[in-house]
Every structure is written in C-alpha cells, then in structure tokens.
Image 1 (tube, rainbow over the protein chains, first blue to last red):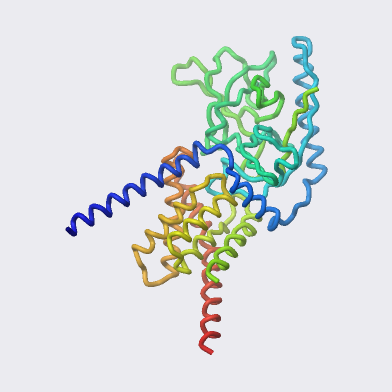
Image 2: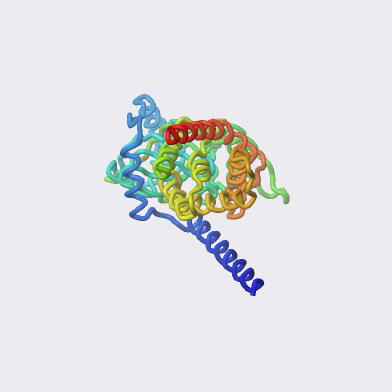
Length: 253
Length: 145
C-alpha cells in the first residue's frame, strides 16, 4: 500500500518535471509573440513605474543617422551603375533600454518604445556603432529587441566583407561567446581579405538593409581541410553595454 | 501584507537592475528571496514568478518554474538558519537557470559566466535579507507592545 503511494508520488513528480521542461522549451524556443495579457501587464507596469522617459540624447541620434547614411551612400554609389534603385526614406525612432535580464544578456532586452510609437516586428535596431538586432515582439509601449549575438538569429545574417574588389559575401554562422566574435565560415581561400576590413550587412535579405556595420575582421584562419577560410569578426557594438538604440523604419516611396 | 512585500520587492528588482551593466556585482534576486522568507505557498510562488517573467523577460514560464524548483529544493534541505538557506537558494537558482539554458542550447558552456553570476548575486541580496529581518523584527516588537 505504502509502496503504491510512493510510486504514485514519483509518477506525479515525473509528469510535473516533464511538463515543466516542455513549458520552458516552449517559452525559450517556440514562443514568438506576446499574449494579450502579457502586453497589458507590461504596458501598465512600464507606464506606471518606468522613470527616466527622457528621449535619447540628440547627439547620439544624429550620430546614428550619420553612420547609417554614410554606409548607405557607399553602398548606393557602388550599386547605382548595376541596379535600378528604389528610393526609400528612413525614419529613426530613438529609444532607451529599460530592462535586461542577466540570464539572457546576450539574447534580448526591452526598450521603451512600442506600437503607439510606430515600432513594428522585424524592424532593425542599431546604435551609432552598428547593428544591434531586430524587434522580436511588441506591446503598445515597449518592444523586445533580439540581439544579433542570439544563437537563433546570427546564422540568418548575410554579410559583405570589404576588400579591394567588389567585396566578399558570406553568412554569419555563429557568435563565439568566449572571445566575443562573430564567425563567418565557408569563404573560399582564393578571396583576398585583410585583417581590419569592415564587415557590413549585404542587403541581400528582406529584413536587413545593406550597409550597416557589423564589425571588423579580427582573425583569419583556414578550416581543417585548408579549402575555406574561417573569419572572426570583432563586433563594432559592445553588446555587453547598450543603453540607447535607434529603430530603423523604412518608408518605401 | 505578504503579497504587498513581494510586489514591492519585484518593483525594487526593476529599479536596481536599471542601473546595471554586464559587469556589475549587484545582481538583485529580491523577489525570489522574499518569496522564500515569507514562506509563500507554491501557487503564489508560481504566480509571482509568472509576473516576473512577463515584466522582465520574454520567456513566459521560465522564472515561474525555476522559482518553484529552487525554493522546493531549499525547503527539502531545511537548514535551521534562514540566512544560509537564502544563500543556498541564490546559488541554486543561478545553477538551475544555467543548466536549463545550457540544456536548451541558449548559452554556450562557460563555467566562469555561472560563477560570476553567483558571486555577483550575493552582495545586494544579503543586504536586502538583513533589512528584511530588521523590518520584521520591528513589526513583531510593535505587535507585542
């Protein structure tokens, strides 16, 4: 009788444990958007308790716009002769980081702008140093930014490494947390790439416009078969220390 | 009264974290400590953990469940001293978070990151514990009078 009760208890604990792991897996890897009750609670809390609603410093705002425009101009000059460009305007929405959990420090953080400020999903987030991430979820007053150092995001970013020719295209394959570098793999050994070369978004994806600085080439190695290069890119942004960001809104004409 | 103290500690968590950077030595876990010190039941621990997740993270059941696990383990160990139990709770919470994130491949294996998070979580939470005990001592004395 007693053994039966003990076994029952063990089974209940086991079911609870598996259920808990499933819920955690769902929230870490599957859940993409906020439920309505989450949005309501979050909006209420940050409206009531968030201090320092002051806007981003104007000079940082201007620096971000200048950096973006300079990089875009460079891209446009190179592409003008090859492509028919659609002209588009961009609008910056400046924002402050209001929350960042230490367990997810290199994955995401929360900013103080949301739907009512014109923020939408998949908008790009930058600062004056370069690309930070994309908007992964929004409420009326806040948004969550997924950093490009997040393992779910990093391998979907197409990049262009500057060289003396037209540049070398590749994909960021992962973020190395130990030495804080991005890794680009599979670049042909015949390509000429120098240390210190800038790495930009290539513009080949729908989400990331071209010309946003990601970092500089720090180290060049070859793979185990000596056929391809492995390039380590030092990020231009210090992901450990982000306070103000700019969200790019692309307005197509 | 207990719920008000817990909600207050949750708000305090937010204000203290607003001043943090990555290398801080003052990581707050005030909500977790308070839930343990007031002997909250499992339902309240789960609900407060859920509120913490909604407000401060993007992962809905993460802290709710890990709060439950951590407090459950510490209650099973059952040290007489609440202060030592709270320290074990902090270490417990950080280790379980680390293992879960590692298991689901959200972070890379990095023991230094875990140790850094543990020692960074001690100072502000120990100070909070002492303030908490002092506050409740004063209330007990007033009730006796």
